[in-house]
Image 1 (tube, rainbow, N blue to C red):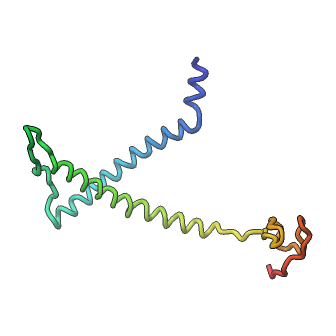
Image 2 (spheres, rainbow, N blue to C red; image 1 turned 60 degrees about the horizontal axis):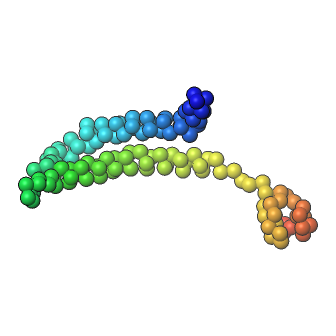
Length: 137
């Protein structure tokens, strides 16, 4: 009984998922902290404190808090903007730079007759024995 549980817990995907959730939570708090401590005060300095919680309406003694919903949408959009501009764009640029550095010229070519992969310097295809066009590489 415990052997199966141990195998389940120690599987790579369960551990990877747990690490991913923990890292995601920690990273989420970093982004939220940046929004709360830097971006929101910056917005407040130029446009005033955005607070729409006063917007509500009542139907049959049921109060609809439309302003709280709008505050949540604005908060989500600000978080998404911060995440995109301060994390996604820089990581994408860094990934692009590292990919350019890792580009290695292929040592094979495709035979035009049988479409097999053969060495670039081959004069004949090893599969169909057709003569290969002359290349300078």
